[in-house]
Image 1 (tube, each protein chain N blue to C red):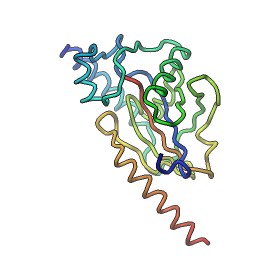
Image 2: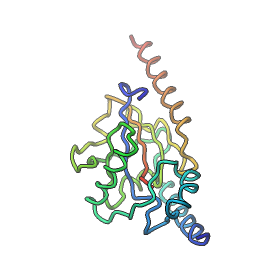
Image 3: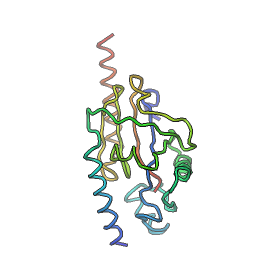
Length: 137
Length: 63
């Protein structure tokens, strides 16, 4: 993964966006088209909304293993505290600088979820950091 | 089905707007948190990376 040495990547698993017992997009046939349009082709279609942290951890682990995105998945608490703090549900991207301040705040998901823009923001941040380090040396 | 989509979409958008008004913007101090991994282990806080590494937060779910 690009920038793995320079950036800490945290995948944070939130409450399900389209569980069977919530805003379900339908079974395999219908959801194949809808999930491709709305949440990406690898999204699951057979998940019930976890009711306990243990259930949430099981789904998060399955997600991590099956999507194989090569980063640790952290699981939000059942009160959705982190999701609320970042208005992150159903999906969102943030870059937090070394100083603890927001360097990039992505738009609200799913339509504001822009990985390419996020990658450019990371490149820009690292270039700026490198430049600042060069000035101080 | 169509009514369901409209109902859920409207509810979700309302929730998003409510929390987004409070969410950090560019330059704001990021709210700290501590979460565990999918095995319920390795508690990790955002602030543990302060002055060490920038952090990319990728929020999502499986559906």
